[in-house]
Image 1 (cartoon, rainbow, N blue to C red):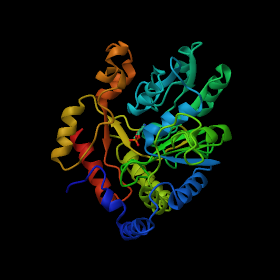
Image 2 (spheres, rainbow, N blue to C red):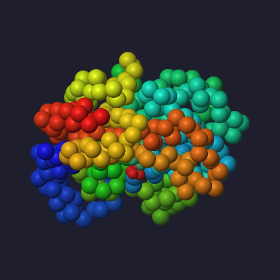
Image 3 (tube, rainbow, N blue to C red):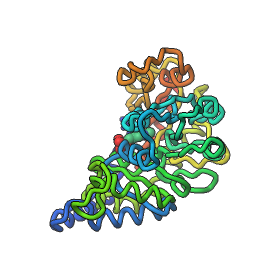
Image 4 (cartoon, rainbow, N blue to C red):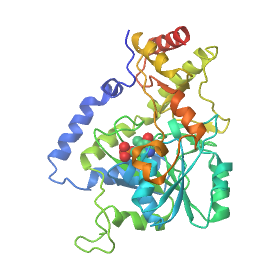
Length: 364
Ligand SMILES: *Cc1c(COP(=O)(O)O)cnc(C)c1O
Protein backbone atom coordinates (compact mmCIF):
# COMPACT_ATOMS: atom_id res chain seq x y z
CA UNK A 1 0.00 0.00 0.00
CA UNK A 2 1.07 3.59 -0.63
CA UNK A 3 -0.33 6.29 1.63
CA UNK A 4 0.09 9.72 0.02
CA UNK A 5 0.98 12.62 2.27
CA UNK A 6 -2.05 14.55 1.01
CA UNK A 7 -4.32 13.60 -1.88
CA UNK A 8 -5.99 16.82 -3.05
CA UNK A 9 -8.01 15.13 -5.83
CA UNK A 10 -9.40 12.51 -3.45
CA UNK A 11 -10.30 15.18 -0.90
CA UNK A 12 -12.40 17.15 -3.41
CA UNK A 13 -13.73 14.23 -5.51
CA UNK A 14 -17.37 14.69 -4.43
CA UNK A 15 -17.38 18.36 -5.51
CA UNK A 16 -15.05 18.24 -8.52
CA UNK A 17 -17.84 18.77 -11.04
CA UNK A 18 -19.60 21.39 -8.96
CA UNK A 19 -16.37 23.39 -8.85
CA UNK A 20 -15.75 23.01 -12.57
CA UNK A 21 -19.29 24.27 -13.31
CA UNK A 22 -18.78 27.28 -11.06
CA UNK A 23 -15.63 28.16 -12.98
CA UNK A 24 -17.62 28.12 -16.19
CA UNK A 25 -20.03 30.64 -14.69
CA UNK A 26 -17.15 33.01 -13.89
CA UNK A 27 -15.62 32.33 -17.31
CA UNK A 28 -18.84 33.44 -19.00
CA UNK A 29 -19.54 36.39 -16.70
CA UNK A 30 -17.19 38.81 -18.43
CA UNK A 31 -16.13 40.09 -15.01
CA UNK A 32 -12.71 38.89 -13.94
CA UNK A 33 -11.59 41.17 -11.12
CA UNK A 34 -13.24 41.44 -7.67
CA UNK A 35 -16.99 40.97 -8.36
CA UNK A 36 -19.79 38.83 -6.98
CA UNK A 37 -17.97 35.56 -6.28
CA UNK A 38 -15.44 37.40 -4.14
CA UNK A 39 -18.11 39.43 -2.35
CA UNK A 40 -19.96 36.22 -1.53
CA UNK A 41 -16.80 34.56 -0.27
CA UNK A 42 -15.91 37.54 1.90
CA UNK A 43 -19.32 37.43 3.58
CA UNK A 44 -19.43 33.66 3.99
CA UNK A 45 -15.85 33.30 5.22
CA UNK A 46 -16.32 36.14 7.72
CA UNK A 47 -19.44 34.34 9.00
CA UNK A 48 -17.70 30.98 9.14
CA UNK A 49 -14.83 32.46 11.19
CA UNK A 50 -17.19 34.66 13.28
CA UNK A 51 -15.38 37.79 12.08
CA UNK A 52 -16.96 41.15 11.30
CA UNK A 53 -15.09 41.68 8.05
CA UNK A 54 -13.17 39.62 5.51
CA UNK A 55 -11.02 41.02 2.71
CA UNK A 56 -9.81 38.69 0.00
CA UNK A 57 -6.19 39.19 -1.06
CA UNK A 58 -3.82 37.46 -3.46
CA UNK A 59 -2.11 35.05 -1.01
CA UNK A 60 -1.24 34.42 2.62
CA UNK A 61 2.01 36.38 2.60
CA UNK A 62 0.17 39.46 1.33
CA UNK A 63 -2.51 38.92 3.98
CA UNK A 64 0.06 39.19 6.78
CA UNK A 65 1.85 42.09 5.05
CA UNK A 66 -1.35 44.06 4.44
CA UNK A 67 -2.57 43.51 8.00
CA UNK A 68 0.75 44.87 9.29
CA UNK A 69 0.62 47.85 6.90
CA UNK A 70 -2.97 48.57 7.92
CA UNK A 71 -1.79 48.65 11.54
CA UNK A 72 0.86 51.21 10.57
CA UNK A 73 3.93 48.96 10.83
CA UNK A 74 6.76 50.66 9.02
CA UNK A 75 10.53 51.06 8.53
CA UNK A 76 12.57 50.25 11.63
CA UNK A 77 9.70 48.88 13.72
CA UNK A 78 10.24 45.58 15.50
CA UNK A 79 7.72 42.77 15.13
CA UNK A 80 7.87 39.65 17.28
CA UNK A 81 7.58 36.40 15.31
CA UNK A 82 8.00 32.71 16.13
CA UNK A 83 11.52 31.40 15.48
CA UNK A 84 9.94 28.17 14.19
CA UNK A 85 7.51 29.15 11.48
CA UNK A 86 7.25 29.05 7.75
CA UNK A 87 9.42 31.91 6.48
CA UNK A 88 6.37 33.79 5.07
CA UNK A 89 5.64 35.11 8.57
CA UNK A 90 9.07 36.76 8.67
CA UNK A 91 9.02 37.94 5.05
CA UNK A 92 5.79 39.87 5.63
CA UNK A 93 7.57 41.83 8.39
CA UNK A 94 10.68 42.42 6.27
CA UNK A 95 8.53 43.68 3.39
CA UNK A 96 7.24 46.45 5.67
CA UNK A 97 10.85 47.48 6.25
CA UNK A 98 10.38 46.27 9.82
CA UNK A 99 12.59 43.87 11.78
CA UNK A 100 11.43 40.34 12.62
CA UNK A 101 12.37 39.56 16.23
CA UNK A 102 12.31 35.77 16.68
CA UNK A 103 11.05 34.08 19.82
CA UNK A 104 11.41 30.42 20.73
CA UNK A 105 8.36 28.15 20.97
CA UNK A 106 7.11 26.21 23.94
CA UNK A 107 8.53 22.71 23.73
CA UNK A 108 5.18 20.99 24.10
CA UNK A 109 2.85 22.91 21.75
CA UNK A 110 5.54 24.28 19.36
CA UNK A 111 3.76 27.65 19.50
CA UNK A 112 5.36 30.96 20.52
CA UNK A 113 6.28 31.14 24.23
CA UNK A 114 4.46 34.16 25.75
CA UNK A 115 7.02 34.40 28.58
CA UNK A 116 9.85 34.84 26.11
CA UNK A 117 7.80 37.34 24.09
CA UNK A 118 7.82 39.74 27.01
CA UNK A 119 11.62 39.35 27.34
CA UNK A 120 12.28 40.82 23.87
CA UNK A 121 9.87 43.77 23.93
CA UNK A 122 11.71 47.09 23.36
CA UNK A 123 10.66 50.70 22.70
CA UNK A 124 10.57 49.86 19.01
CA UNK A 125 8.34 46.78 19.30
CA UNK A 126 5.05 47.43 17.52
CA UNK A 127 3.42 44.06 16.92
CA UNK A 128 3.36 40.31 17.57
CA UNK A 129 2.54 37.67 14.97
CA UNK A 130 1.50 34.44 16.70
CA UNK A 131 1.31 31.54 14.26
CA UNK A 132 -1.20 28.78 14.95
CA UNK A 133 1.37 26.27 13.81
CA UNK A 134 0.19 22.95 12.39
CA UNK A 135 -3.38 24.12 13.16
CA UNK A 136 -2.78 24.28 16.95
CA UNK A 137 -4.00 27.55 18.47
CA UNK A 138 -1.34 29.66 20.16
CA UNK A 139 -1.86 30.79 23.77
CA UNK A 140 -3.76 33.95 22.81
CA UNK A 141 -4.88 35.13 26.26
CA UNK A 142 -1.29 35.25 27.54
CA UNK A 143 -0.18 37.06 24.39
CA UNK A 144 -3.07 39.51 24.62
CA UNK A 145 -2.04 40.48 28.17
CA UNK A 146 1.49 41.28 26.99
CA UNK A 147 0.21 43.09 23.88
CA UNK A 148 -2.07 45.27 25.99
CA UNK A 149 0.65 45.96 28.54
CA UNK A 150 3.01 47.34 25.86
CA UNK A 151 0.47 48.62 23.30
CA UNK A 152 1.35 46.05 20.65
CA UNK A 153 -0.80 45.10 17.67
CA UNK A 154 -1.49 41.39 17.11
CA UNK A 155 -1.80 39.82 13.66
CA UNK A 156 -2.54 36.13 13.89
CA UNK A 157 -1.01 33.98 11.16
CA UNK A 158 -3.81 31.44 10.70
CA UNK A 159 -2.56 30.05 7.38
CA UNK A 160 -2.71 26.56 8.93
CA UNK A 161 -5.66 26.98 11.27
CA UNK A 162 -8.98 27.23 9.38
CA UNK A 163 -11.58 25.96 11.84
CA UNK A 164 -9.29 25.72 14.88
CA UNK A 165 -10.72 26.90 18.19
CA UNK A 166 -9.10 28.61 21.17
CA UNK A 167 -11.10 28.29 24.40
CA UNK A 168 -14.20 27.27 22.40
CA UNK A 169 -13.95 30.34 20.15
CA UNK A 170 -13.11 29.89 16.50
CA UNK A 171 -9.84 31.50 15.36
CA UNK A 172 -10.87 34.67 13.53
CA UNK A 173 -13.63 35.64 15.96
CA UNK A 174 -11.24 37.97 17.81
CA UNK A 175 -8.76 40.49 16.42
CA UNK A 176 -7.06 40.65 13.03
CA UNK A 177 -6.16 37.40 11.34
CA UNK A 178 -4.27 36.52 8.15
CA UNK A 179 -5.31 33.48 6.13
CA UNK A 180 -3.83 31.55 3.23
CA UNK A 181 -5.82 29.45 0.78
CA UNK A 182 -2.77 27.90 -0.83
CA UNK A 183 -3.97 24.59 -2.35
CA UNK A 184 -2.66 22.34 0.44
CA UNK A 185 -4.11 24.37 3.33
CA UNK A 186 -7.21 23.15 5.20
CA UNK A 187 -9.25 25.43 2.94
CA UNK A 188 -7.37 25.56 -0.35
CA UNK A 189 -7.95 27.19 -3.74
CA UNK A 190 -6.64 25.92 -7.11
CA UNK A 191 -3.92 28.51 -7.06
CA UNK A 192 -2.89 31.35 -4.78
CA UNK A 193 -5.39 33.13 -2.55
CA UNK A 194 -5.55 34.67 0.91
CA UNK A 195 -7.64 36.89 3.17
CA UNK A 196 -7.57 39.13 6.21
CA UNK A 197 -10.42 38.91 8.68
CA UNK A 198 -10.86 41.57 11.31
CA UNK A 199 -13.25 42.97 13.85
CA UNK A 200 -11.64 46.38 13.58
CA UNK A 201 -13.34 48.86 11.26
CA UNK A 202 -10.17 50.96 11.08
CA UNK A 203 -8.12 47.96 9.86
CA UNK A 204 -10.86 47.24 7.31
CA UNK A 205 -10.81 50.83 6.07
CA UNK A 206 -7.06 50.58 5.48
CA UNK A 207 -6.96 47.17 3.81
CA UNK A 208 -9.69 47.78 1.21
CA UNK A 209 -7.67 50.43 -0.65
CA UNK A 210 -4.24 48.94 0.22
CA UNK A 211 -4.99 45.74 -1.74
CA UNK A 212 -6.30 47.72 -4.73
CA UNK A 213 -3.74 50.39 -5.73
CA UNK A 214 -4.82 52.58 -2.85
CA UNK A 215 -8.15 53.09 -4.56
CA UNK A 216 -11.76 52.80 -3.44
CA UNK A 217 -13.26 54.90 -6.22
CA UNK A 218 -11.83 53.82 -9.58
CA UNK A 219 -8.93 56.00 -10.78
CA UNK A 220 -8.81 57.89 -7.49
CA UNK A 221 -5.76 56.79 -5.53
CA UNK A 222 -5.64 57.93 -1.92
CA UNK A 223 -2.60 55.96 -0.73
CA UNK A 224 0.28 54.00 -2.30
CA UNK A 225 -1.36 50.59 -2.33
CA UNK A 226 -0.42 47.35 -4.03
CA UNK A 227 -2.26 44.98 -6.35
CA UNK A 228 -3.30 42.04 -4.19
CA UNK A 229 -6.84 40.92 -5.01
CA UNK A 230 -8.34 37.49 -4.56
CA UNK A 231 -9.07 36.18 -8.04
CA UNK A 232 -12.80 35.55 -8.75
CA UNK A 233 -12.08 32.05 -10.17
CA UNK A 234 -10.38 31.19 -6.87
CA UNK A 235 -13.24 32.79 -4.95
CA UNK A 236 -15.74 30.60 -6.85
CA UNK A 237 -13.75 27.50 -5.86
CA UNK A 238 -13.49 28.63 -2.25
CA UNK A 239 -17.24 29.33 -2.10
CA UNK A 240 -17.94 25.68 -2.82
CA UNK A 241 -15.14 24.29 -0.67
CA UNK A 242 -16.06 26.43 2.33
CA UNK A 243 -19.33 24.50 2.71
CA UNK A 244 -17.27 21.36 3.39
CA UNK A 245 -14.70 22.81 5.78
CA UNK A 246 -16.49 21.60 8.92
CA UNK A 247 -16.72 18.02 7.66
CA UNK A 248 -13.11 18.06 6.49
CA UNK A 249 -11.94 19.42 9.85
CA UNK A 250 -13.86 16.65 11.61
CA UNK A 251 -12.23 14.07 9.34
CA UNK A 252 -8.80 15.48 10.18
CA UNK A 253 -9.65 15.29 13.88
CA UNK A 254 -10.60 11.64 13.49
CA UNK A 255 -7.31 10.84 11.77
CA UNK A 256 -5.40 12.73 14.49
CA UNK A 257 -7.22 10.86 17.25
CA UNK A 258 -6.46 7.50 15.64
CA UNK A 259 -2.80 8.49 15.31
CA UNK A 260 -2.57 9.64 18.93
CA UNK A 261 -4.24 6.46 20.22
CA UNK A 262 -2.25 4.19 17.93
CA UNK A 263 1.13 5.79 18.61
CA UNK A 264 0.95 6.30 22.36
CA UNK A 265 3.28 3.35 23.02
CA UNK A 266 5.63 4.11 20.13
CA UNK A 267 8.09 5.99 22.33
CA UNK A 268 7.89 8.95 19.94
CA UNK A 269 6.77 12.44 20.88
CA UNK A 270 3.27 12.96 19.49
CA UNK A 271 1.35 16.26 19.47
CA UNK A 272 0.41 17.72 22.84
CA UNK A 273 -2.97 19.44 22.96
CA UNK A 274 -3.68 21.77 25.91
CA UNK A 275 -7.16 21.46 27.40
CA UNK A 276 -8.19 24.83 25.92
CA UNK A 277 -7.13 23.96 22.38
CA UNK A 278 -9.21 22.50 19.59
CA UNK A 279 -6.73 22.18 16.71
CA UNK A 280 -7.61 22.11 13.01
CA UNK A 281 -4.95 19.42 12.40
CA UNK A 282 -3.42 20.97 9.33
CA UNK A 283 -0.51 18.65 10.09
CA UNK A 284 0.11 15.77 12.46
CA UNK A 285 3.72 16.23 13.48
CA UNK A 286 5.75 13.72 15.47
CA UNK A 287 9.45 13.76 16.36
CA UNK A 288 12.25 11.30 15.81
CA UNK A 289 15.86 11.85 16.95
CA UNK A 290 17.16 10.20 13.75
CA UNK A 291 14.57 11.56 11.44
CA UNK A 292 16.35 11.13 8.13
CA UNK A 293 16.70 7.37 8.43
CA UNK A 294 13.24 7.02 9.92
CA UNK A 295 11.72 8.92 7.03
CA UNK A 296 13.52 6.67 4.55
CA UNK A 297 12.20 3.54 6.26
CA UNK A 298 8.65 4.92 6.18
CA UNK A 299 9.00 5.88 2.53
CA UNK A 300 10.13 2.34 1.65
CA UNK A 301 7.04 1.01 3.43
CA UNK A 302 4.85 3.31 1.29
CA UNK A 303 4.22 5.98 3.91
CA UNK A 304 4.87 9.45 2.51
CA UNK A 305 5.91 12.14 4.96
CA UNK A 306 7.01 15.77 4.70
CA UNK A 307 9.23 17.94 6.93
CA UNK A 308 7.70 21.21 8.20
CA UNK A 309 10.26 22.78 8.20
CA UNK A 310 13.84 21.58 7.76
CA UNK A 311 15.58 24.98 8.12
CA UNK A 312 14.32 27.69 10.51
CA UNK A 313 14.12 31.20 8.99
CA UNK A 314 17.07 32.58 11.03
CA UNK A 315 19.40 30.04 9.36
CA UNK A 316 18.13 30.70 5.83
CA UNK A 317 20.39 32.58 3.39
CA UNK A 318 17.58 35.12 3.02
CA UNK A 319 18.36 36.29 6.57
CA UNK A 320 22.16 35.94 6.42
CA UNK A 321 22.63 39.73 6.67
CA UNK A 322 20.86 39.80 10.03
CA UNK A 323 23.79 37.86 11.53
CA UNK A 324 21.87 35.20 13.38
CA UNK A 325 24.08 32.32 14.48
CA UNK A 326 23.60 28.60 14.72
CA UNK A 327 22.58 27.68 18.24
CA UNK A 328 20.86 31.01 18.85
CA UNK A 329 17.41 29.40 18.89
CA UNK A 330 18.15 25.88 20.13
CA UNK A 331 14.55 24.72 20.55
CA UNK A 332 13.61 25.76 17.03
CA UNK A 333 16.78 24.22 15.63
CA UNK A 334 16.16 20.94 17.47
CA UNK A 335 12.57 20.85 16.20
CA UNK A 336 13.77 21.51 12.64
CA UNK A 337 16.01 18.45 12.96
CA UNK A 338 13.43 16.13 14.49
CA UNK A 339 9.94 16.94 13.18
CA UNK A 340 8.22 14.75 10.64
CA UNK A 341 4.64 15.19 9.39
CA UNK A 342 2.58 12.03 8.89
CA UNK A 343 0.03 11.71 6.06
CA UNK A 344 -2.97 13.91 6.80
CA UNK A 345 -5.87 14.24 4.41
CA UNK A 346 -9.63 14.71 4.99
CA UNK A 347 -10.18 11.78 2.61
CA UNK A 348 -7.78 9.45 4.42
CA UNK A 349 -9.41 6.07 5.11
CA UNK A 350 -9.19 4.14 8.38
CA UNK A 351 -7.29 1.46 6.48
CA UNK A 352 -4.70 4.02 5.38
CA UNK A 353 -4.45 5.55 8.84
CA UNK A 354 -4.01 2.15 10.48
CA UNK A 355 -1.38 1.25 7.91
CA UNK A 356 0.58 4.38 8.86
CA UNK A 357 0.23 3.58 12.57
CA UNK A 358 1.51 0.04 12.07
CA UNK A 359 4.41 1.21 9.92
CA UNK A 360 5.47 3.86 12.45
CA UNK A 361 5.28 1.45 15.38
CA UNK A 362 7.29 -1.16 13.48
CA UNK A 363 9.91 1.13 11.94
CA UNK A 364 10.45 3.53 14.82
C1 LIG B 1 1.30 28.87 3.88
C2 LIG B 1 1.72 29.77 4.95
C3 LIG B 1 1.87 31.15 4.74
C4 LIG B 1 1.85 31.79 3.39
O1 LIG B 1 0.76 31.57 2.61
P1 LIG B 1 0.85 31.76 1.02
O2 LIG B 1 -0.58 31.76 0.60
O3 LIG B 1 1.62 30.60 0.48
O4 LIG B 1 1.52 33.04 0.74
C5 LIG B 1 2.17 31.95 5.83
N1 LIG B 1 2.34 31.44 7.04
C6 LIG B 1 2.23 30.12 7.29
C7 LIG B 1 2.42 29.62 8.68
C8 LIG B 1 1.92 29.24 6.25
O5 LIG B 1 1.83 27.93 6.50
